[in-house]
Length: 272
Image (cartoon, rainbow, N blue to C red; front, side, top):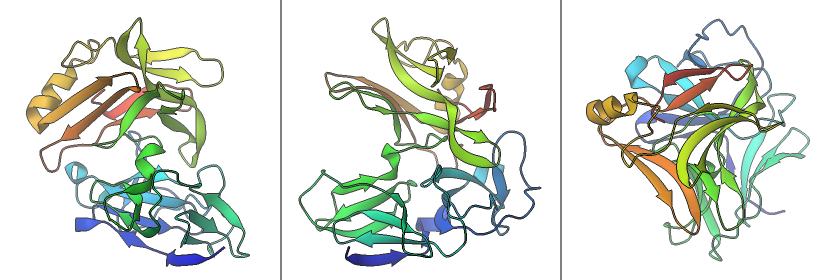
C-alpha cells in the first residue's frame, strides 16, 4: 500500500464542519433530548476513537454542534492512536496503532483519474477528488448516518437496487447502525418517505405521498420552505427514486429526524 497523505484533522470553510479522530470517554453530560450535541470546545467522548464530521448548528447557538456523519460506526478504534490516510489509489483508510485497517472507503470506480486530495466541503460532504478537481471519486454523502444535510439524498437506485438512506444509532452513546432506516420509496408509484425496521421490514412512520410541493403528511414543510427558502426535490426516473432538499438561506436548520432506541420519531427539525 502506498500512502499519499495522512489526514489527522480537517476543517471546512467557515469552520462549520470539522473532521476529527476523537479519544477516550468522559461523561457525556452535555447531551440533550432532541439530539446528540456537545459544546464546541468540549469534544464529545463516545470513548471509542470514532471519526466524526461535526456540524455547527447556528440556529441553536454558536457553542453547540451535532454529529452529522460517522465513518467507522460499527468498527471503533480501541485507543487514540488511529490515523486517517489517503492512498495513491484514492482509498481512505482508518488505521489503528498497529497499522491495521479498521475502516475503508472502498475502491472507487467513478473515475480513471488518480485521486489527488481529500477535502471537507462547505456543504459537509467529505470527498476524494481526482486531478481535474471536479470529479468526486468517493463522497460521504453516499453513506449517510442519521442526519440529512442539504444536497444529500435518500432513496433507491433503480438500476442496481442499492439505496441511500438514514440509519439510526443503536443508542445515544453508540453510533453503530441501529434497527431503523429512513428512505424514499415508491408506494403505489407515488414517492413517500418511510421509516422501517431493517430487521423485519415493519413500517413505523410514513410522510404520506408527494404532492408536487411537499409530502401530504408533513404540513410543516410549507413553513420551512417559506421561512428558510427550502427547495424540496423528488426525482423519479429510470435510474432513481430519491428525495433531497437545499437551503438557500444561511443559518437554516438542518434536517434531522431523530429515532429513539425503540424507533420513536423525535424530530429536531423535520423537513421530510
